[in-house]
Length: 274
Image (spheres, rainbow, N blue to C red):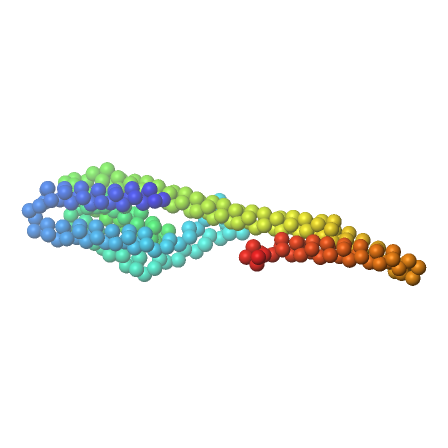
């Protein structure tokens, strides 16, 4: 899309420059020459201002094509609203200056081809096609004014160029929309994959902790319980043995406490672990 825009902008200034050079060479002595030069400069300035403003403003997200849209969205295309008022005013001024310029100097008519792209990028589809049709009629009339006789090529050529240019621009925009949709799908898929990996990592960590708790703390608590029960059974008959069982249970409890602290330390965030 950026390459196409660059080519279109370059073509506009090449066409404008060639038309201006042709006019100065052939009609430089006419009284409307200052007006033509001023209008050509105004047309170039309006085009540059419009391009800079469009480059600085965020573009609306393209509507995904029907073959890439979800099934529940494919049957009802999203409505395309009007562009912002400043964009409409810039386009209107651009078209008005071009029309007056072509009325004074028909050689500027072919500057309409890059303006097709501007109209298609600014207006809703139907309005853009209507404006392109008006452009084409204006170009045909301007070319017939330059000719000394009726030429079929002058009548058929501009509509053919308009149809071809519009088809190319529309196709490129649809390709850009498809690429944008694919990029959005890729980003969404990567986010979902990252979330799935985080969930799987959390589950794996929980399973690891459960196994460690079972292998260490649960078994140590079970051992303490057995030792204390054994000490209780021989407390009256063999106090020394009972105290030994209690001491062993206390040692196991101490090691279990250290193991529990290690678990807590491993689970704590790095900035809190210290």
